[in-house]
Image (cartoon, rainbow, N blue to C red; front, side):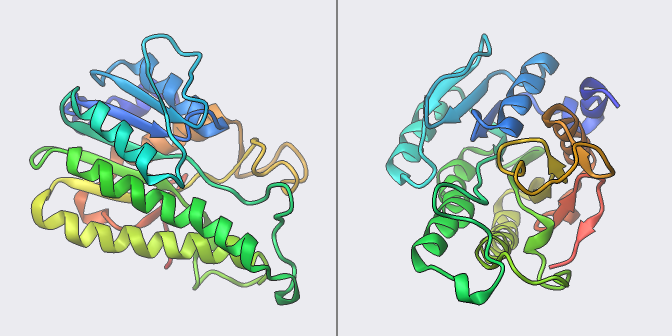
Length: 252
């Protein structure tokens, strides 16, 4: 399935405002920016990252730290000048970094690591919603999506471990569900989604994905192709859900 085909639906053809990608310097974020530019249906594509740079020509680049609300607010104010935003995609997230690693036991729980995971995986996307959802149109189709994870499902947790990452993604899913209920009152065609991309060959998953091949293991371009297809098919009735790369609903 090609990227253009994934987007070639009546719903997506109607989306002609700006697109915003937060975490644009990561594997999935960068691939998404490139796909959106190649597809050409949005008036402007904005790439937000900590570096404030993008190698993609014709893209609006903005410096944003997802745990710094002031930087998010500044970017939103600048992007608002381009008119309505009909796609906001939060591609930021952490599973491990420096002294943070998925916990195998509750004995490894560390308050500093937990706070960092929640700041990036939960609070950050919530702050993006706070400042960017108001830029989405009151009428017409629009999407706010954030990368979630199957391991954030409480019902589907059968292996344990990974306390902080699981909990931060579960909290994100609850925030998205709550946001969907509120947004539906004033923007009835808006869709709020958590998206599980599968296992993607990025730095986030590298220490944990084992072999490079297998079902549910994708390159960033393949993952973006799947996610664009899921968003193209999503309906307002699905707003607030977490959808996997294949379009299936992940239980809460």
